[in-house]
Image 1 (spheres, rainbow, N blue to C red):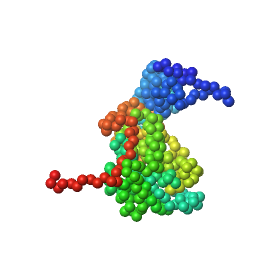
Image 2 (cartoon, rainbow, N blue to C red):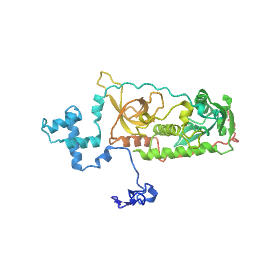
Image 3 (spheres, one colour):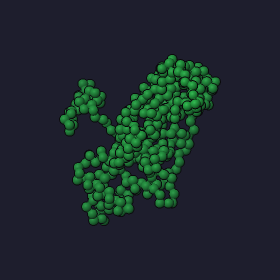
Image 4 (cartoon, rainbow, N blue to C red):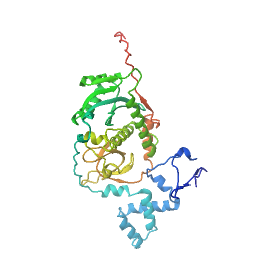
Length: 394
């Protein structure tokens, strides 16, 4: 039994089969159901694991490291242990400082060297041989999902389970046409034939591509894409709960949707045409690789490696992971906390998140009036609605 500081208890039970003790992680069955599990490593959380005295000594060790112009950890420890440096800092203090703060970011910015680029791996051709030819003729379900005012055009193929998502400014014919054109062309290049599109009446513009549109009834949504929206919402809420942030600005919400879609496309579906091949592999031949795609959590804090030169510019930058790009070079997308821009990088170093990052992101979300609750809405479209004519005299 574990007792929290507020008096709540976490019970461990003994397994009748093996005799081991375990705890049910379903929060609704525990008395501390209002608590959250945070897997992201932050400096604040790391400090809580040590006494104030140890933290103070660790701060002195970190300050002395900067004074000594950032020697390697091995050299730093040897200087202290061999009494070559008469100081109150001990090897134990250096180890605690590393556990709390991780590698010194200034040392990373100065010492990081350029690493060779990875060999570009061309994706395998789509495995049509293992798929019934009838599944090459596809139907696309489409709808517009609104998250805290951010409009996203989502599509999914019911048979293959492949989905896409595109941010749009508004549900106008021009925006819908521009968002759907790359999606349709992508499937055509992959060898598929788009026979039909199912959606609301606002997607009638798709008929200009020579594709039949099956329109839903008034104030109704295509049922398959609506169920997929619920699945997408569950994944997004879980990712946000696992991060160190309570609310996100719109730019990071867009990244959250792309991150969720990426892994939904790269995992096999039991209800799809294949229980072993992922939708991404069926469409483009891309496989999920653990070493390249499963190393960073969403919004994990890192120091990304910048292109190096002979100037005194920092060779690393603080950033938050936004997920794999899915290109052949296996780069990741990052949000630069200094410039506020999104960029691609191939190499990075994981470090604990320093204090102040959460406050910065929450301030950005507050300025955009983001509640942090991820309010999901579906666009309603009335096919019988006809706008009143505009009086030119007004």
